[in-house]
Structures are given as C-alpha cells and as structure tokens.
Length: 68
View (spheres, rainbow, N blue to C red):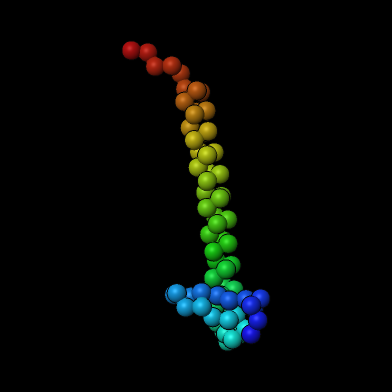
C-alpha cells in the first residue's frame, strides 16, 4: 500500500479502491455517473427556469395594458 493509492469513503469507512471487488467498483462508477447526470440535469433545470421567467416577462409586455 502506498500513500498515493486511491481511497473511497463509504458510510464513514475508508477503503482502498484496489481492495474492492469488481462489483463494488462497478457500483462506484454507476454512482459517479448518476451524480454527474444529476448535476447536468440541475443545470438544465436552472436554464429552463430562467427561460421561463424571461418568457413570462415577455408575455406580460406583449399583453395590452389594463384599463379600469
């Protein structure tokens, strides 16, 4: 074991990546992929929310002025 060896912390326990089974490594890769996908989707949601606000503002400006 060297100090440069990659480690992963799961539920407060530290594991050497090299000591994990192929199944555990595959599940870690799956989790990393899903975490990245969540980040990507949150960014897309932020973009869409901003666009919705802009469209709402544009709609308000396109409506006739209220007269009472």
